[in-house]
Image (cartoon, rainbow over all chains, first blue to last red; front, top):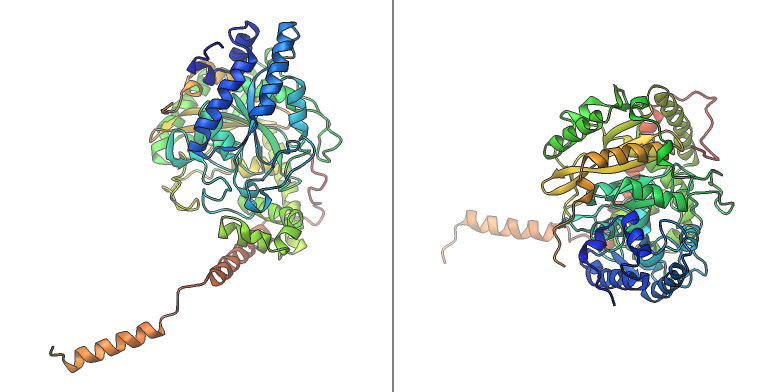
Length: 472
Length: 66
């Protein structure tokens, strides 16, 4: 058996795929090494929900046979990955991160897993998550069947939610990429907190068939990776039409970096306060430096104002209306009381009292939000802002504990989700030894351009190549 | 041990106060408090949203497409 050098666990998709094709090691050897690492280190961060070693090894041997015959299936062939445990994997437990669903088993694979399977990617594990993707509003990082998601950069800090396992697993080199979900921040937040590049696609671009529904009109699936390029490679394979997802946009996505517009033709909007003194004090120097790097790419930067809306209240009300309906039987049955977070239990129960007029008003105001973002993008191509205004929360503290006061409003995550817009979060430095991220938000179906600017940013910086100080 | 009448009164009052102090909340009571807090948060959100001027012609973002 070939020895798998430790650096391999932090390789990009392209690097790993090239080594597999060059037969530096077999896919079987690589998969075994990743499974060993996942099972050994994953529990340290409460990142592992379920190891899928047996199926992964079988699949890896298939890939080796294909590579032997020079049958290639693209950049993801032979690449080990994980999925958030809200995605169905045939005949395996799919817990949605929640005790009442601990023994739930589906007899089919989620659509994205089928797609990744077809191109030879190797699913090695299901990854932990906040229970029910945080529906009902959780107050502690411990709101999960597997315990609080711990950050590989500092285990006293949270890995973010609700895709806590995907965030920690990619950061710790337990998988090369992971699939997470976002209703409002669940891909971008773990990406920023764990030093990853995460992509939230346009609503409807990636099928959610086989994923737990929290909000039909807000849920999206997307990749958490090490680089913008990796996000493009994964999105290329998972995006596309699916008639089984009523929200499917009927669009495909081809990752075409060479056809991206030149930076000189791109206008990026920003709010000055975000890059002056708007963020948490410890994070301000990194955000200022990142802004200068973006400027140096040759793009046009333009001051903008984010449309004024009560984004948080709108997202909360829409999730309450939709999740209240989705989980109505679960809530009425009393099983909801088995969840870990009392605050979340109460939040779910309160959903059943939501008047239809309140939900409908929120959805009508959402139409105004969408129109306002449409107008915003008449004046710029994308918007730049800190993903989160500071580093990861302390695990021991309530998530709603007040941090340092900030001047920035930080409405880009809920606003972008309400309007169904794509966004990419890029690692951009550190505060208190913890990673920070900046986000680019774009027009609908503007992923190629977001990835292209992200890739240019990552050619000028090495934040995305930094590794957490882990004991192996 | 000598004890003044004032000290004695203090001890008696403290005992009475302890007897009158509410017992620690049960899980059910704590759950009710959380539920009332969640309902209150919902009402607050509704009030905030109601402040947004909304033309009567605005339709909800159903069949949502980005």
